[in-house]
Length: 161
Ligand SMILES: CC(C)(COP(=O)(O)OP(=O)(O)OC[C@H]1O[C@@H](n2cnc3c(N)ncnc32)[C@H](O)[C@@H]1OP(=O)(O)O)[C@@H](O)C(=O)NCCC(=O)NCCS
Image (cartoon, rainbow, N blue to C red; front, side, top):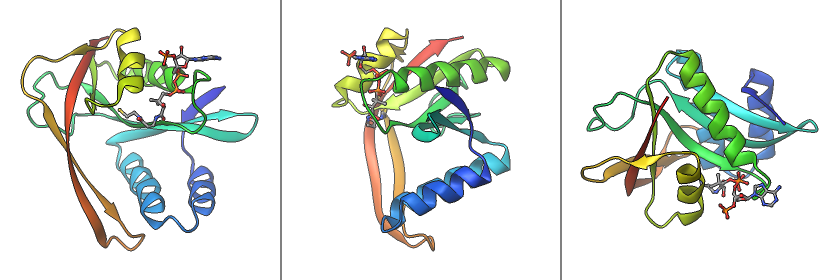
């Protein structure tokens, strides 16, 4: 498996694959723009030429209450599960955060997401003491029209690097 930042060609490919799913297409384009701005890296996992997973690594937490200023894993997704793709993406994100000279890496996880939480805890992530964070995000049409707004309560997990 190879994990590396998304290229413009990858984005075009993902958008084409997501034809008929405008909200998902919007997310892909938004992640590309964030990478282009320098505020994040959009990591893609590839196996035998196919894109099999993704995550964003943000340079700074999206949650203002997280004072440790970690690099932050966001939108981790293994397109094929239970084959080590999620673990490999988290390890690649950690390596990149280390290259950025960061002392902490963190992420929000919904309390009901037992599978993801098991993965993070196995890799040494621990619950940050204090109140839960609220993950606010929107589903948008490709033209940016907001279709639905979400506010999901999440536990925040941290790992020192
Ligand atoms: C959470 C998520 C990213 C995990 O990705 P994944 O690629 O399935 O993770 P891994 O394969 O590394 O590990 C998952 C399990 O598969 C097992 N596994 C890994 N490689 C394996 C293999 N070759 N054969 C059998 N099992 C394997 C791991 O031991 C782990 O077992 P566990 O659940 O009992 O702890 C994935 O389930 C996902 O995309 N979920 C939907 C989106 C989501 O919830 N994202 C997280 C947001 S916080």
